[in-house]
Length: 207
Image (spheres, helix red, strand yellow):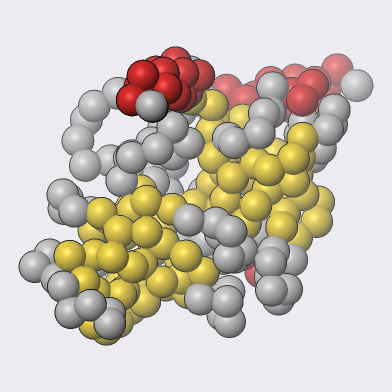
């Protein structure tokens, strides 16, 4: 039992850092984030709406609306939590929308799943004047309280004009291999509550 407890503590120490393959920051700025490690105990990739179950829950510090990443990139958002388990809304779910951008760029769009292939998502509403190339990295924009900026989403595979010619839709090859996903990191944003409360108050004052 002691060995298992020591291993859990070691896993937490290893996870409590931003330096992993899926993190590609645009600058050296430090963020108020840390990471919990969890194992995937159930996963779907072929359903119209896919979810992932992990073996960490409320007792381990996991809460709803925490971001989830693999060692390679974005996985999803915690949707439901019990004492010892949590269910993650996968990137491969039409309810999942992610603010992201071309790495080192300044304009953002929104990633959604194409509903057909677990390897690809669509990044929409990217302004047409934005410069990009096939193979460019797509990363999180940081315009949310869930994911810090610079978490890898995938790479540009191809693009098309939207019905409104002022925007592109990019086909993004996702960095996370969902069909073989075994371990994940859950992101703890120490300032999430403060940010959400401030934004809520601003909306309230505007009513």
